[in-house]
Image 1 (cartoon, helix red, strand yellow):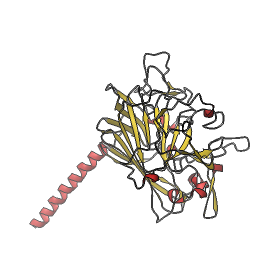
Image 2 (image 1 turned 180 degrees about the vertical axis):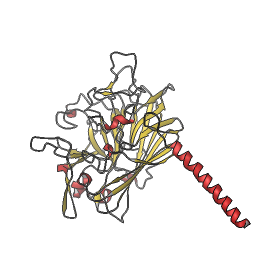
Image 3 (image 1 turned 60 degrees about the horizontal axis):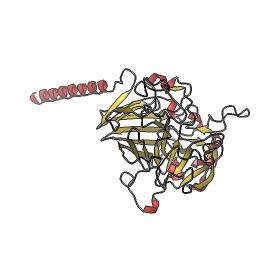
Image 4 (image 1 turned 30 degrees about the horizontal axis):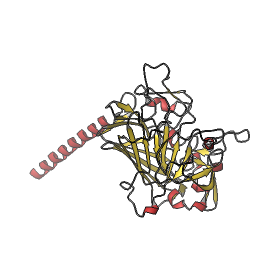
Length: 410
C-alpha cells in the first residue's frame, strides 16, 4: 500500500510539474500586442512573426549607443498579409527562392510547370517566370510556432504535394537564435513523398542607419564587400540566368571582391545601366562564393562571405554562411510608398518623408546558385534536388554585428 501511495504521489507531482511547465510554455508563446514574438541576446533583440517566418524588427546600438531598428517591416503583424505590394519583407521564400525560368523544370524526364508570378505579358498575363516559389510561396503563408524561448524561436510549415505546381510534400523547420551580438539561423527542409527541388533563403531588407540618417535616405552610402566573389551568374534582361558564369573584372561595377566599396560608388559608370535588368540601374545580382581555393574551411570561423557597413551609424554586419552564392538587391523597386515603422526614421525633418525611397535599403540573400534546376551543366543537383529517404536540405548562416571604424569613405 505504501508503494502504491508513493507512486500516486510521485505521479501527482509529475503531473503538477508538467502542468506548470505547459502553462509557462503557453505564457511565453504569446506574441506581443502587435503579433510579434520577441527574442533577446547580448546587445541585440529581434521580433519575428509566423507570416513567412519573417523577421520584423532587429535592434542593435549604433556607435553612439542609440538603439537602431535596422530591418524594414511593418508595425503590426496583421499588415503583412494584406499589403498589396508584398515586398517579401524579411520572409523565407520557398519552396524555391529566386527565379525559375519559364516557370518549369525537369526531373527524371518529367517536366513540371509551376505557377508564374513575374514579368506578365499579353500572351502570358500571369508572368514569364516564377519568383520566390510562386504567387502563394512560403513567405505568403503562416508558419506554426513549434518552439519559443527567450533567445530562440522555431517555425514550421508543411508544403503539400502539388502546391504551386511543385511535386511532393515538404516539411520545413526554420530556427532563429540570438547570441552575443549575433543572429543565427538554420533552415531544414525534408522531402517526404517525391523528389523535388528545394532552395531557401532569408529575404531581409537592411538599412544600417535605421532609416534615421539626417544626411541621406539612401543606403547607397553603405559599404559592401564580397571577398570570395570574383564571379557572378549571368542573366538576361528579366534576370533569368543565361547559363554563363561571368568574371567581375577588378574595378568593374560588380567588383566587390577586390576591395570594399560603397554600393553607390559605380553609379556613374555606364555599365550600371541595365545591370539589374531592363531599364534598371543598380543591383539584383547573384555572386558566387569561391572559398575552395583556400582548402578545407569551417564556414563558422574561416571568413565572412559578405560585409555591410555604415560609416554614419558605425554598425557593421558580417555574414557567415555555408551557402555557395549570395544575392544583393539595392532596393531599385522601392518608390517611397512603403511606410517606415514607428521605431525608425526621423520625426522632425520634412525633407525626409517617413517612407522607404528607391535605393533606401539593401536585401542580402544567402542561397545556392539561382535557377540551377534548369542548368544541369552547373552540376548543382546535389545541392538543390531532394527525395524521400535522402539527406535533408540544410541552410545555415550567422549574422554578426559590431561597431566599425573602417567603412570606406568613397
